[in-house]
Image 1 (tube, rainbow, N blue to C red):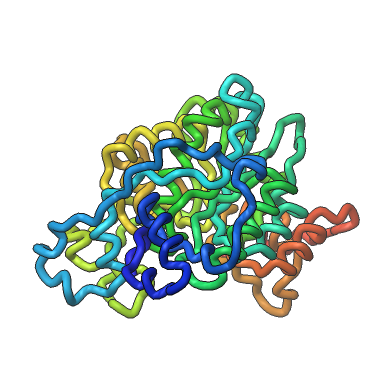
Image 2: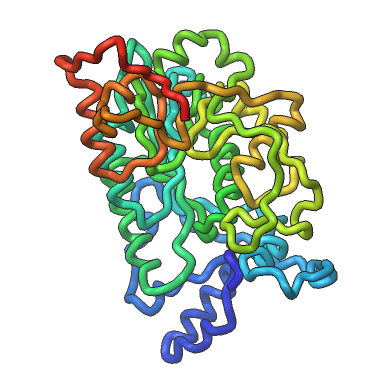
Length: 379
């Protein structure tokens, strides 16, 4: 199934076929079966939703030349879809927060923007983040703001319910950016590109951006302290995380990271930081936006950001406090001992209840850690 366009099976909806046809004429960029689940609330009634357009955007058609690619028919379906639609970059926003940074004129007041990649169904993760490390607050005299980056569930009975859920979250929290594309692993790069375009338009003066997944634990107090220590970097290059270098595409079809030669012939990736979490300056985010307009989409999002940096002549850097592979706690210490986490910026990966527990544990005023504890143990 194409990640962004209707299938002919929409005609199988029977009695609602006519409604399906009407929507098909509006857009063939995604499969939305809400016509079978009753009427949806008017978009204009939900804060953050764009006003209905008098002129629907033109659909992005599949590239017919991909069938000339050698071995195209033998590729997995999601890889075929990527090749068909990788030229498609313009997808309308369904939920927006244009005033998140106070508008372009006031965005310099936002020191740190948390841009968290989330799928529509990950409600529990978003809720615990809102109550813990993702709180919008003032730390050390600077402001933190938060947005979740989402696409659309690729069809099925859950799609209308999850779209409705995101609208409810938007009404309550005003922190969801959602675009009209299918939220799949190979579309994470598209999510990044659309976010950087939004950043350029709605939050151009932000000093620093934390960009990561919704299953990480982030000590935002430490992130702010590190960013404050790098003052001046917001006007220069900063891009730190778990540095990965001297690797190339995975050619095994059993891997979710499988990239065949038809997508990338080179055996080399540029240096990049793991997508679980990175911290970048506003300058670097703007540079990525500019370069992304000229760099062809690639299905692995963190590698793609490395490509944009390389094109700009910039390099990612390692930060010992960003642990996207988790940490090693030597025996006999308790694996969940907050003393091993209190100085870190990020650890991947946590389930929601662990995020809540660790957030309160590392902030406990009575927490005492012996000097024997190695905060950065070898992995």
